[in-house]
Length: 352
Image 1 (cartoon, helix red, strand yellow):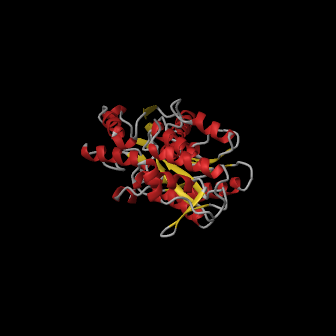
Image 2: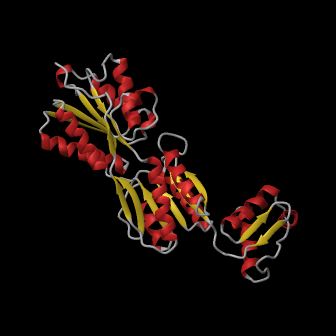
Image 3: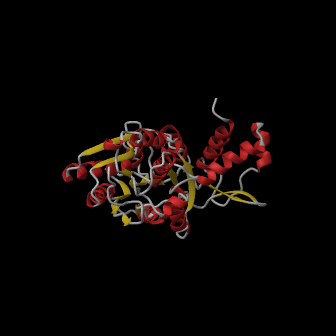
């Protein structure tokens, strides 16, 4: 059996499509629908809310529910990896401001770094008739990602902009950073300060993390570092996985311990810093650190050399492109170059 709210929704959709109700006509009241389907008010309202999202009806508080004069809704969806933490709320703010000023309303989804949940949200929104999406995909560098679904939706005419990850899908736009550049630049900085044993700590399941690490490793090989530690983790950094890696690296014998670490984002850099502090390793006298994102991570931000992440600009740009696509323009791929912010977490290699 289908959920009762979907039964009510289908009934009303059939009524609307049959021509029984004309644009502007008033639909049965909530009480009438409750009685007809032996349903709660909450169930009836859920069905009506879904039809409103599809642009099929208009709900007027105190007056009732009416057939819409237009079949086009003005809702677009944005799904981010973590809705309440790190840089993601800023991306949403940038997109929401741009969409609001252009008469669109925003559906907000929290994937919670779970590709299954992300897929469920996307499927639900398609049922609601959402025609435009901004997506910061989870597990974007793995086979667990939802690239297949995004490709299928694009073929069906859904307008989609991905942020941070570019899957090179026809008819799908993207707004990304030049992540490889950040990794290469970090390697060059460590080399200029005389470091010979370095490490990179990154999340391998996320395409930006993988590209930053690849850029770093490629440049390190080119510059001829004595030893390069390649340390990847495949879970969320908010699980504390970087701390375990930091303990492994910083407990190595001093003669083979890295004197400089590039962290794929500032949340990872903060965890490396915390471990160093517990082990009595000073930043930057004993260990140099470079992060990425210039994220709001507390006092450590004041000294961390990092790369600025244009968080709100990425959200605004993604919304601008999506609006253009909804008006019939072609997909496009935008790449922004992150700006280096030099503070005081990097110094010359210490004496062994």
